[in-house]
Image (cartoon, rainbow over all chains, first blue to last red):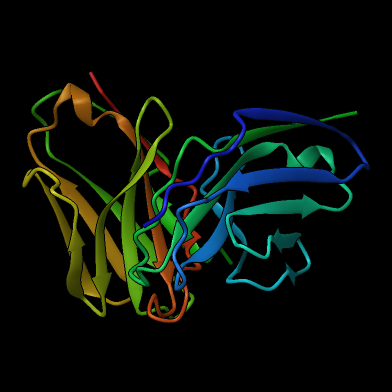
Amino acid sequence: DAKTTQPTSMDCAEGRAANLPCNHSTISGNEYVYWYRQIHSQGPQYIIHGLKNNETNEMASLIITEDRKSSTLILPHATLRDTAVYYCIVSSGNTGKLIFGQGTTLQVKP
Amino acid sequence: DTAVSQTPKYLVTQMGNDKSIKCEQNLGHDTMYWYKQDSKKFLKIMFSYNNKELIINETVPNRFSPKSPDKAHLNLHINSLELGDSAVYFCASSQDPGVNEKLFFGSGTQLSVL
């Protein structure tokens, strides 16, 4: 599975959009991009995933570049409860074997 | 109702002891997993079971033995606990990993081996 690169940490003002980037330049054609987050002392939580089209759900939007080498997770109106570690994962294994990196620690500030 | 529940939440024990962590999911999923998060916060898969059958075993010491009495339960037994086993253990489940890898995680069991 392809590796991902994310910034170690980011800050965002409450109520503003949080844009979390992820590079996955070695992604192959059948690999999806998944985003999970882990709020302190909780288990990881699925957010969204996509193959090549942009995706949106009730939690976030996922923008994938045309060459699929990078993506951005967008939380449109960040709240303090969105403070968490966000993981970008690339996988085609369809086995549930998710490879978590270090992720991005997002701090939402009042 | 908690979708994936694991007990206990905290487990403190002495080296050499044997302990178990229980996991139950009420989502009707066919596949369940155990993940381990170490002190550096890296999350790694340990095992996965599909309908009570072992699918993934990630070179985990054989002191760790998962047991799946039915597809809603996946328990983790650990024999002869060592200091290095101290970590947070997460149970998870998914409907069908052949479709997508949307996993539902429990809230974790923090194991401390003294």
